[in-house]
Structures are given as C-alpha cells and as structure tokens.
Image (cartoon, rainbow, N blue to C red; front, side):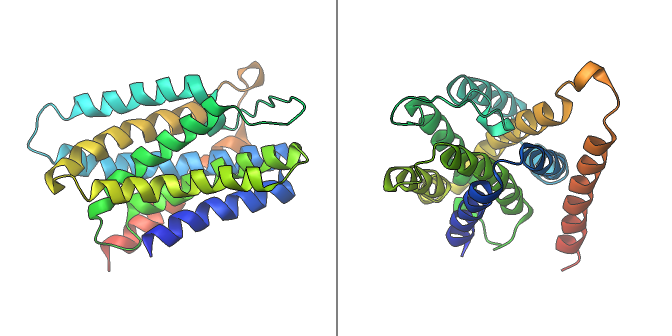
Length: 231
C-alpha cells in the first residue's frame, strides 16, 4: 500500500503539471503550501523521534542531510524549489544530472519507510505532500518540451520508483539504523522547506499570500498530527 501511494503521488503531480504547468503561480503556491506542511512534519514529527534517540551525536546526521541536499541541488539546480530551467536542445532532453539528483533525493527519503508499520504515518504523508509539487514541476517541464513521449514516461517511472526502491533496500539494514536515516532525511526536509519559505520576496515586501499558504500547510500538518495521536 505504501509503495502504491508513493507512485501515485508522483503520477498525480505529473498529470497536474502537464495540464496546469503553464500556470506558474499555481505551481509556486503549491510548493509554498507543501513547504509549510513539510517543515511542520519535520519539526513536529521527525525531529522529536530523532532526538529521542540515545545517541547524543544524532544531530550530526541532520547536518549531513542538509549538506547532502546542498550537493544534490548542484545537480538539480533547485528543481525541488520550483526553479524550472529549460535546457532546450533539438531533442528536448532533461539533463542526466537532474535525473540523478531527483532519483537520489527520493531514494534516500524512501529508506526510513522500510520499517514503517503505519500505512499513513506523518512521515509518509510528508513525503507524499512533498512529491506532488516536485512532480508537478517535472510534468510542467515535460509538457513544455512538447514531446510527452515514451522516453519522458521512462523518466517519470524512474522518479516514481526511487522511494519504493529506497524502501526495499532499507529492509536489508538493521532496524536500529532507521533513526540515522530519518535524521538525514530530516535535514533534507528542513533545507528544502526553509529555502522555499524564506526565499526573498520582490523588494522584500510582506507577501501575505505566501504567509497564508504557509499557515494553511502548517494547519494541515497539525490537523494530521492531532488525528494521528487520537487514533
């Protein structure tokens, strides 16, 4: 069920991007909403579990996650933040570096799910909510390329299977290592959501739309938190 949800979240995002990708403001708003959701999941769900660990050096792995995401962004060029760079040539090819960066990013996120016992855990919801806007941008890129071919569906499939493959690999690791992978992903989540939320506005003016969207994302995550803990 978890694998199916991971794949569906990518496919839904791609289809939304294909049909609404030309509406840049819609994509931006979706990213901001997801950032509010993601940072709340990170601070309210992931970090409490991580720092409940008896390893007093666990914070190093959170920092490692931030550094890994910084390195991945040298490949993806901020694709996760909605920075769509159209590398157009005669074949409209998505750069290999971008594909690798997105795959590694999603693969790492899937590893902590290997020992997940709940179908809709807060961590999984965070990934699903995060996948949709990234896939939206990917779908927008494919639509913009005007070549929604088998080749591009293969790229979508690679991205869709990245987290499930990470989840399957994680089953071969000792369950006690889950907390360290979770710490790394927590660092990745923190970096991505922070960059989206705190990116400079034009002339540094108050952006009430962004604030409202962030608050809505936070409210959704907190609502899920309350529902989860009252089950």
